[in-house]
Amino acid sequence: MGSDTVMGTAERRGAPRAGGVQVTAHQEATDRDDPADEVESTAREASGPAREVGRDVRGQQHYRPLWVEEPARRRRLPDPVRTAAVRSVLLIALTLLQAMVAFLCTMAGSWLAFPMVISSVVSTIAATWGALDVWVTRQVWNQRNGVVSMPSSTARALRRERRRARRQARAAERTQERIRRRGGAGQLSHS
Image 1 (tube, rainbow, N blue to C red):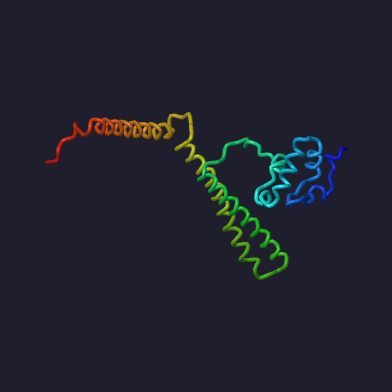
Image 2 (image 1 turned 45 degrees about the vertical axis):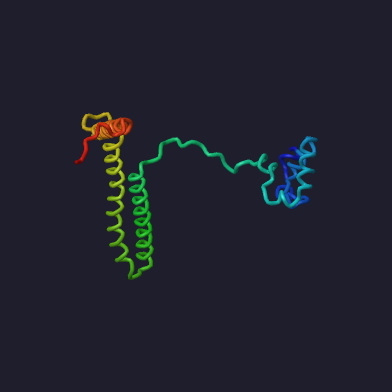
């Protein structure tokens, strides 16, 4: 392996140079390879305190991100559906926790076993409702906003209404603009 690929902890952290600028071993090797960079680095060292305030330009050139963001495979869920999904996950987690506590209390012979079993049953009903709520919310959102190719879809009618309202607003705006350009000649007096 080359010296660039294997660096010790001290080399990665960098040693302070004149002016308090941190430089890694890789940067020093790059400095030595290019004579133009050597002139730049001596000029930078000479500027001293002025460079301490700003970040090292060379440090930004060798910046390598910790991870690379990949584009999402699926689109993000609509907000109402996400809210219902989060609520459902919390209810299911609480139900599992209560069931585990109920089981442990039953095994230990604790007085808390009976109330925990009852609350687990109630939580199971709530968790089932939460899971159904996600499904219903998703269906309703798709029906209202989604592109559903069914004759019963209300999304088309809503889009048609929005388009009509936009057209009317644009027409009213054009009329007002025409009146303003004429200098108000077309307006009736209020006397």
